[in-house]
Length: 496
Image (cartoon, helix red, strand yellow):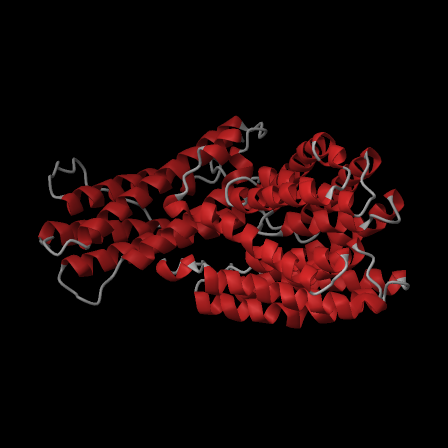
């Protein structure tokens, strides 16, 4: 876990810039709330609104990010109104909260924007419970949300919009389908059921902090698709919470809510959340838990008992998520992994065809975007296969096969990157051998995706031609992929 965070590559220092900008944006939001004369409740609300605006908005283009950011208050303020208005009506409040959970997860069917707005809606309701917001506090809270989202937008799109200098990332669309065949629909039902369990049991554990359990269930479902992904994420959330509570006992408790020290430590936590989110959910949860402890210290209620209660409620939320994905419309790791691998292989096919056209002299052919899309698809494959390669997975045979498949897919990606680099060279040439090799690669992909036989040219001759070398490497990797993907009894995904 330490190696994953401190040795993980950070091309272009993107994670570093992401985290540093978040600290600046949230600090500006809190400062603006303070200058506006808001109370501690308003400042905390504003800081969390800015954090969400900077963290959850992930549209592919800067324009899309700006539109989504502008829409956040339109979703959040009505939810805030409902949460505060139902403060003294627990049954209606709870049912509304579950409705927000279901709608927030269902919104993922509309891609990154739906996901961002769904997360913001849920967290707005959650924050209202965290701060025990009442209708009388709404004007201040409204102003805090609006000012903070504006401050975050100024930093993100005005002062430091480093995304303008980067190519837009390829964002794979979520798996399709209709009705209950659509994964996002099934997840909406699962998340609502899991949150219902967490809400009921969480209230038995604590009538004041029950929302922690619902929050744990919600965040376990974020960025997961299959049953295995959700269970692994639940384990990591629990582990991160345990470590974060230990850190809270050592760091947050001795601070005793001192504003200056708390502000510095909170900034460090924000940096940690944003810097580690892409590489380790456990580490991210450590920082989230420590930040929550610091905020409770500011509110004057932090103590060992509260930290222990947070662990208990997190356990309830993790159990609710686990029961939901196992018992309610389960989405197996096998089906999701197979779908992502199929999409990755089709992307290999398209990228090879585009590279062949570019080498043949077609000026409008550009395989680079497809290569970037392949990287994103393989990231989704790795996420889906994570339960099978997890250190605690006792099924060693499946773990070995899953790792073998990942290694071969990585080989494909490496050869594609090399092929794209060669195709970008204006001096690169095209000949009959290259056309034949491209055809064989495409035929191999079609065989893998359509259920046919994969054949590879025997005794492929050595070549010094870079494009041919990469295509031969692709042929070999695709041929080796055939057995673990095709053999039902030996498939690394069976039973997952």
